[in-house]
Image 1 (cartoon, rainbow, N blue to C red):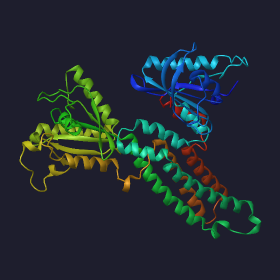
Image 2: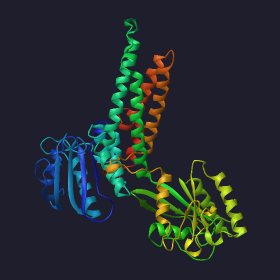
Image 3: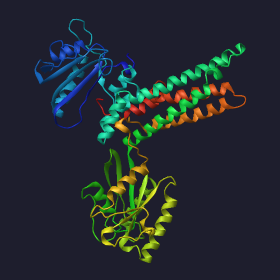
Image 4: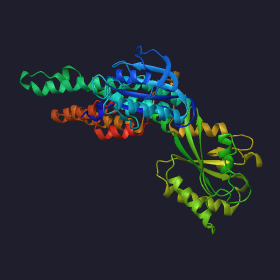
Length: 473
């Protein structure tokens, strides 16, 4: 019985639904007999051939393009057969069923199944095969899913750079420098009788400092890449009729939320993803914060507070037309106090003064001039708000668009590398460095780097990563 990762697999590789073209993909060892059964003839490698796809009785299921990629020159590193048919779900299911049927049929000459054990692929299993067969490292494999899921053009370009190996190249460079440092430490540990201080003569302290500087640059780029992938969650909060729904509509450029003069119109969260300079911003409009006797509105307010507690940035809206009303000012103060206790301290709050088109310009130096002053109706202040949101998110556009896409786990791994290098540097610069502890910190730093590219990683980590891919990829 073949191990799971060597069993032949098949799946529909295109998204569910109807389309002009749909693809059925098969990967596994020795697909030649299966090609003959489905296509009625052998195929030239990597050459598209237009022909009928044969059912068991020889009739045509459909006509389309067949492509055969012999190992190792394929996406998975195994033999791969792709059948490009018309994109109807029934046709594709028939083709997939025929693949499984033909694989189980015995060859008349040998009495052996054409492709024993062919089964349906699990989500991400084709890309997992590519990783296991050395066609991609783990960071590149994740970039495949990120490219498919990209919500902005900037994220798509950055994911393509990661798929092309830009991120992995940085990681390999850091790893090579770490390996060299570990060699110096091990040499000092292994040959103490030679009285040769490999560490001082090779400027190990300087090498660690340079490595920390390189790591800082890569970490900064990874954080930017993670921001492109994940975006930030921006919650619009404030009292009823402060202009929250109007601001959501203005940012989104569409009438997504109902806007009326009636307090409590918004009863639940309304969310829309927009992009600013390619950065996805998940904007969430919430119910007005106040005491309410309406059960439905109370539920909406409770969800508003939950959103505030889970936000990356909070826009606290204040109505300029009521900015001199004592009761309104008091209620804003109560909300501000509750917000400070409810949200994490690291989450920034940006004061936004709305309805600027309805009031006279503020005098120079006014306390209300802090934050952003805007009008959702005229658009005044919206460019400044967008700029401030990017600043709060920590976004810095890379010159020439040279970013690579990264994930939260990549950022965490690089941060762990930094922590281990800091301890290693302290050990090295001490009066009597403990070389065994220094060696261990460098080893842990290398392990953290290896987890990014998959050179070292637990099976459960691989399972979590590839299970989130679409089937057929």
